[in-house]
Image (spheres, helix red, strand yellow):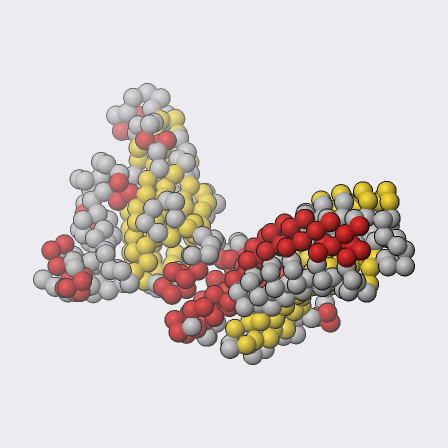
Amino acid sequence: PIGNGRCDPYFNTEQYDWDGGDCCGGTCIGHFCGLNAGVSRPFGIVGDEQRDPYSILGYKFCEDPTMAPLTIELHNFEVLQTNEEYNALTGNEEGAAICSTSTVNVRCNGISYLHFPTHTFTNASDCALSFSETIHVPFGSECQLSLNPACFGRCLDHNVTIYYGSDTVSAPIQSGSVRKHIMFSFGVPSKCLTTSLLRYSSSIFDISTHQGQATNALSNDVISEFICIEYNDLFIERYALAVFNASLHFKSSNWAAYQCHGWGLPAVRTACSNWSITSLTLAIDAGNQIGTIPTELALLTNLDILSLRLNSLTGTVPTELATLPLLVYLEIWGNQLTGIIPPELGDLSSLLGLGLAFNDLTGTIPTELGKLKNLTGIWLDDNFLTGPIPSELGALPIISLNLSNNSLTGEIPLELLALTDLAICNLQNNNFTDEGIAPDVCSV
């Protein structure tokens, strides 16, 4: 019985190669594949047991771990108050409410994995429920879910959501109403890409997100799958760069190159050590880039230089950047960033230079910056910072300090007199109540 196109649960084990492949759509061969295969109640709908079993196609017992689980949820049903003619034909009570599922078809790479005809509910309480069914398709598939709504004078609507995983709290892929989407097209990345990237984002299937766009790009280039399998830590760096590209919408065409050999040129320049990225710089001559700084840059764990200066970046400074243990220079000056200076930046123990000048930052200067025992340069000028200068800065080896053109208040702390290596200091155009430092040390 093994390999005859009919799923036998007894042989549906790894020992028998999952009944010779009979129990999964991606491996079954034969005319009876998926027919009468234990799916008498697709979506858990009670009442279809007497339906012709050959009108339903599915693979309820697919357990092959090489297959990707997808869950389809039907919900938010439109309710129709039936008319007298319909009730006479069906025997329903006068004024009964009905709703209906659409005919559901799922095909991946030309193979059918699920076919479920329409089912009409005549109990109004059923119309308030949601129904889900999990299927298994090969990783790396291109899939289409098509829907044919039930029509009773007018076609009844409901919503459909597709998830990766075996439940409806998994990673969403697509969602929409039948009225607006009679066809959903989506891809399932390779197993390596899927399992690797889901550790960092549940949005990798959603093409409307930067994470989904990055995943789609990686699925279609020629080297990402190899890097994912053989050098997974470097693949995660490649994913971070792909999200970076999606966030800033670069116009460069060199995104398929390896990240240490021309990736992103001319808009982006990278430097590497032992094949891992250590420097990421937006080229000043590559145009005025727009977009936001993605949190995924924190996945570049060997980064020591991050320079995004002189562009039109918006949004906030991601707190996640504070997790980069080797970061020496953080330069994001000359943009349009808003929000506060994250106190978490005080955890960048290797930092020598912090440049956030010429932005629209607000709030106070975090006292946590006093933990940066190696900091020699701090440039926060031309923002909208308020409050006092933290006295903790006086314990740092600062050579260059520029806090000018803000709205800082209070007294200039005398602790700054301890900055014996201070060579450049500018505190002009603030609202200090007392200079506190000799004018020949720092111009006020």
